[in-house]
Image 1 (tube, rainbow, N blue to C red):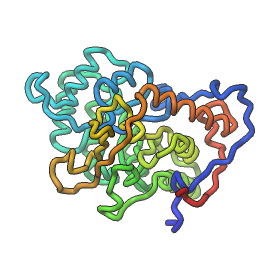
Image 2 (cartoon, rainbow, N blue to C red):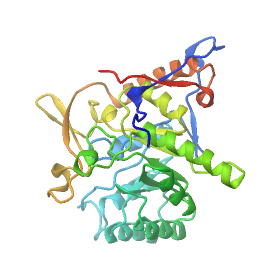
Image 3 (cartoon, one colour):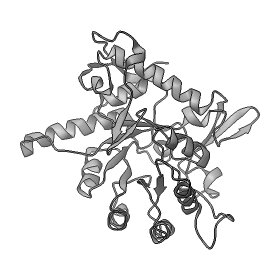
Length: 337
């Protein structure tokens, strides 16, 4: 691997001639598995980022979301249904436009999915959410979802290499989540020594496709990619799309919102990693940390900010929609300090 890795901080995009009469006319909508969403941005599927009320807002206003998988038992439902099942029940009862959940690879996760299936509840997207998806352990869960939820779109992650993408592609997933160790509250790179900057992963995947073209005689088809982790500035969305991503997942932008599920301590939002001690409740295999964020705006206002910035990015890219990023040139620069 190159000694000088690409990251959001070490790449800049080159402006192109624009024909847009107004940036406000730039189209920021994205198609994912036949679904049309207003923005190519999705909040991280974490407890401090997404809750049922926020998920409903995203669903009913045509934004993509993935509900987290870290719910506890609920007294509001009968029997031993897990909180995710309760969430799916609620969304079905209210007939949401979009029902999108996460699952793991444990027996409890499979039981949860079996309950949802037995109740014949609608689920539009299921995300198999594990720290290292280039792993034998994800295959049984993928096969289970494919068999029992044939009409549900399947997202799997995370991986960081072209080999990981190839592995999941062969298993027939619909979307792949790319990024290991890049998030602001992720300590994987410090605890394990393993990490690839998300933009470098996207670059390596594109190079892997080109290498495979030379062997196969054609460009291999891979599923859409959600770039997960490392985005600090709104302009990083444009960079991720330029490098081949279809969507970008972000946590801190949303956890810091006034109406996020994150707790407020001393006037600051406390953003906890999903594998932090504070959420796991034990110190085994901890790969997350807690950071404090200054309270900012609301989710609705944050989405407007992102849209405005992305429309400006489209204008600089010389196009009128997200496809304009496919032909943008980029250059390596020294990181900002």
